[in-house]
Image 1 (cartoon, rainbow, N blue to C red):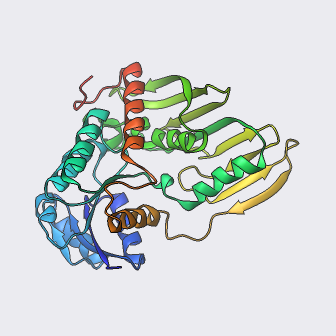
Image 2: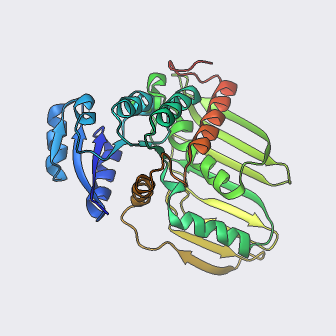
Image 3: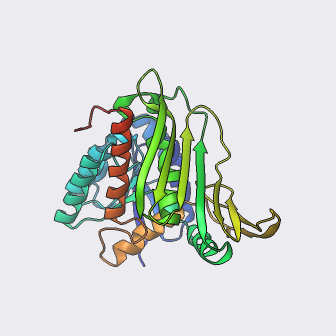
Length: 326
């Protein structure tokens, strides 16, 4: 297998995490960084021994050596930057939330399909192998699973990308997508009804939200996220023969199985990893090797399903972004 040259658009916090990941993998090379600030790009490139530093995104997508572009800009800019990549026939690994709304997601996916270019959403929990282990434990160790709770909260109130509607801010797209994806990965999509509520900031983005999936077979999933405080990040799945506590739905490291009388039965730990980002990169490379335009772990239809759900929730809450068409 060749060594894939990775280009990164955006030089913020998550781009640094990806650069570390790419440098650690044998299959990849942290090749290029692009930022609107050329000096920032140069410093980033020096830090991670990258060959190229670009002061514009247009320069990066025109580089013929780049095999895959990772988009690490705010949610509001994913559509624009992914479209730029696809128009230059560059495969794309786009950070979550995939776009600001479902209409943008549909347009990008249609463009990828028309041009036969790889495109996938980089929601790491979908790619982490331990997530599959958790699903197996649920199926085998706690009887019939009936309830799920999941929460994710961080004290990020006041951050520009969180507070501004024009940056597609709020708790839902930044944090709420993780409990939602955790529930969908664990309980599936046979949802009969979705109920929800949110509290908004003075900039009219959601600050706290609570979402409940009621399933046709009687199961229930309850999810929460907020931008005010640090939460426990736990996911709990309960069945008629016990329950499992997942320490961190973002990047699970430990699953603890309990009996119905609350005694620890077993603790299963995640194998060592770089930081969890490596699996989405490797899945992208494997898809490219096979000539696929999407990953098996997060196919286009799953991304569209989640984006349409996010739109429906925001419509109910009357949380709107300038890019919305509803």
